[in-house]
Every structure is written in C-alpha cells, then in structure tokens.
Image (cartoon, rainbow, N blue to C red):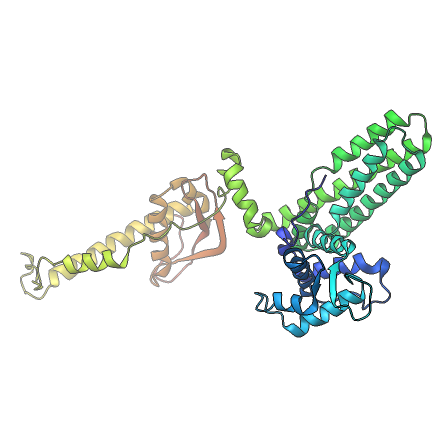
Amino acid sequence: MAEQIAFGDEGDGAALEAAVRLANWRAFMAPVAEDAGAVARHPEVARLAVAILNVFAEHSGSQGLTRAEVLEALVGNAQGWSQDLVGRRLSVLTQLGFLEPYILKSHHDRYVVRPAGLAGALAAERLAEHGGVDELILLLDRARAVFDRSRPDPDAALDYLVSCRNALRVFALDLQRQVAIGTPAELMQSQRQHDHQGFTRQVADLNKLVTERFRGQWALEEAAAALIEAEQFYRQQLMAAADKVVEQAGDSLNFDVLTVAEYTDAAFKGDVALLSRVGGALVADMPAVWIEASSLFETVEGFAPRSRVRVRPPLPDDDSDGEGDGALRRAEEAYERARGRRRLLADELLAGAEEADLTAALYEAGWPLAAAIITDVLALGDDPAEPYTVTVQDGLLADPQASVTYLHSLRLRRTPSPTHPASTGRDV
C-alpha cells in the first residue's frame, strides 16, 4: 500500500515544477470538466483550498463556520493572500459543493466541508507528489482485495486485471516518450514521480492469485499474463530513463541528479566502499587555509623584523673595479650554462626528430622532474634566440592513479634558423 501523504503537507511535491503540477491537475479534472477553463491556471488556488480545509478542521464548531469566520482565520496568513482572493475562492468552493450549508435553507451562512471535497484535495496533493502513480498503487490494492474474497467474482477480477494492465501501459508509454524527447532534468523529475518499489511484487502476487483461484479460466489467465508483460514494459522504460540520466547528467558531473535529501540519506545509510568512490574522478584544488582575522592581527602586531635597515652585501674579491662587473659576468655564465643544459634536454626529448609529443615523457618522469622539464622547455620556446617552439594543447588530461595527476599535452618542435641550423646531433 502506498504511504498516504499528510494532509496539507506537500512533501517532495514541492520539488515539482508548477507547470507540471498544473498539467497533472488539468488532466485529472478533464473527465468531469464542462469546458477547458474549468481548472485554475495557478497552483496557489490549490494551496488556498488546503488552507481553508485546515481552518474548518481546526476552528469549526458543531454547526460549521461562516464566511466571515473563515476570512478572519486567514487574516495575516504567511502566503499573503488577500481577503478578495479568499472570498472569490470561497464562492467557487460553495458553488461546486466543496462547502455546503449546514442547514439547507435560504440565506443560511454557516458551512461545512463535504467529505468528497477533502478526498479531492488529498488526490490533488498526491498528483503534486507523484503525478498519479499513487492511483495506480491504489488500483492494484483494490484488485488484490477482489481476489482475497472468499468467493471472488470472475467478471470483477477480469475488469480489475484489464484496468491495471491498461494503467501500467499508459504510464509506460508516457515514460517511453520522455526517454525519447525529454531532457535530463525532466527525466530526473519523472524518476522521482515513479519512485515506487512495489509494482513488481504486487503484479506477481496478482498473477499468483489468478493461478490459485481461477486455474483453467483462459480469459483471466490471459489477462494476468498481459499484466505481467505491461509491468515488464513499464520497468524497461524506468531503466531506460535512469540510464539516460546517468549517461547525460552523471558523466557530466551534474550533482542535480539527486536531491539534497537523497544525498543526505546516502551519507548516513550508504556503503562506505561506494561512498569512497564518489570523488575518485574529480579534479579539485586543495582548500585554502582558513585564518581568522583576529589571529592575523595578533600575528602582525607581534611580528618585528630582525633588521629595519637594508645593508648592502660585501663585494666579491674579484670585483676589482667596484662596479659589480664580476657579479654580472657570473650571472651571464650561469645563464649560458642553463641554456646549454636546456638544449641538451631538448635534443634528448626530440631523439633526432624535428617534433615530439612530450606527454608520455612527463607521465613517466613524475613530479617534480616533470615540472623541471616543463619549465626548461617553456624557457627554450620563449627565447627568440633558440630554434624551438612549444605548443600547449587546450585539452586537460587527468589520471587520478598516476604521479602526474593532470596536465595539458605538450609538443616540442625544432625550427631551423640562420644562427642555429637544424641538425640531428647535439647543439652543445
């Protein structure tokens, strides 16, 4: 049996779009509507009807309530409904018999709720939550009740089997259409509407009862088999919808696939091994170190530099002219040594070719050697005097298991120049 929602509580139905709820309500009322304008175009009217029911349930005396008492009870409501809106809704509910006079006399202004109106409000809430799937659960329960009788009526049993089969087919065909043309967001919403786990068990139980109570009656056995086929078709569409959601939304790391409540439930009840795999393929930066402002101020106020006067370092012994020529010469020599080392590295990476993809070499080198290779190669490519060009691809390569977890593809190419002709040997 499907769990009955609490009166006036929208539950998960609040997650449904207003347009979807209105479409469900209009389709629900279509069989008994006089014209296309019979259903309101805004979901607020349904909430107002529920609020009016709550007023009658909590404040009604032995002889009902007057319109003035209902209006007074709803003054200052959190939704901000005006008295004019409430008055118009009371008039509609009275004309349709949702509210009826306590005494059938002219000018009697005390009203009570007709129970059928309460049933309609509850049905509207179920539509908002599961889009009518609850009614299919109720239909299966009623069919089960027919079979549980001591002397079940074969005609009634056949009617219920056919009705259940047709209802399942309608839901399955709607799901099939959504799988074909629906967006991942629409499919996720459908998955939440069809979040019932008892269909297979209930259909199997009905089929078993047909075998036990009506063995040999071909029409009933054929209807039970058709019901099994309809349930399997319905289940296939549910699986297809879930697969499409995972394919289009799951692979793109769309975390809207589940609701906040479902993530919370998984955190408390999920298997630790499965939960540990959630972020296995994510590339994320380390969180920043949190420093409170008060701690920062205390540190700054307590810090005193060792020396407040900048002192020039002593000149090297070989700096005879006193102008720093020796230091400049040593810097130039160090730069030339670094340039020569980079050329040797480039020749080693090119291995005699004019161009090479360095991605595999970086993966094999691991950190920090890969960082040193990238730095030296980029320095060569940036030096206009060197015959090398470096191309960094836009695509990001990620491998959580490797030492170099993520990088961009890097290509090195030797470009002939007048000062450095292309050769297959070492340049330095």
